[in-house]
Image (cartoon, rainbow, N blue to C red; front, side, top):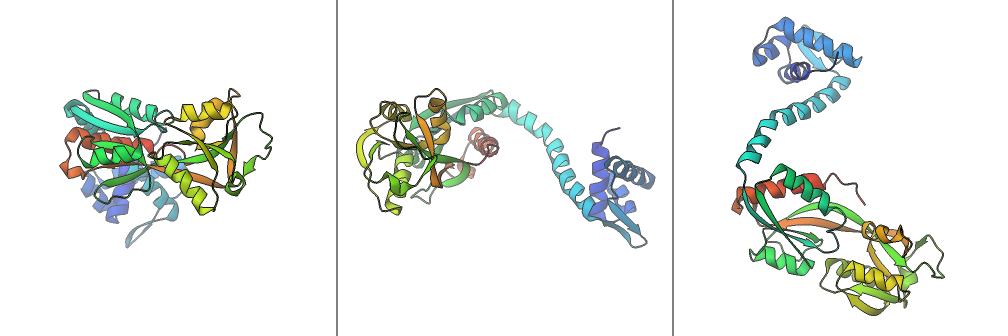
Length: 298
């Protein structure tokens, strides 16, 4: 026998109303039905979930854990019909911007989820630098954008998404052997950077400033692929997101070294106030946030 939604509903009703009789009234069933369903649930879990007394029902600590989980399950089940209505009724065009350095790591998986759930929404994706994407959202040229925090503006809604570890990349023939390296050890070394308009480059420059160092910037690229190409050729080092670096490290083009202490960048979804959005933009924003937060941190 398996746990059923009916058993969970009876437990939640008893917890909410404090008695078998009140729970039965709320569920429009008989009191013996509620009692029976509670007994079945306790037998299945192997724990006593409630204490019964003349004054009513008290939920035990073990029962509270089950109540909390049951609420989530019941809420998710109840929302299934609403989700199907969304799929049938939501349509339109949504313009989404995303920074170039994030598009290859997590975004394709989020995009697939969006297209599966809302097939009638036409999602137009544009890559760009954080600074440019922020301005386009502010002026209405984009509905949403994935950018790097922090932001300088307060007139946009900001929803944190995933966090990415930043790592040092070097040529495989480098004389440096440490598994982890400090920012201060990079002082004066030839450095391959990204265009200063990218959020990643601003973040890296801030790390250098905080540690009082100044690497020797010999080239600024517009894409991580170009940065990695220069590093692979032995022209310098760089700092990039771990997810992007691993693809090239796995085939031996570069080596990855963790920073000590570890450094991270935070990505976020930015948009204008939800009440000003179309229904298509609103559901894409909400689904994007939900899906993206399922990725592991770091």
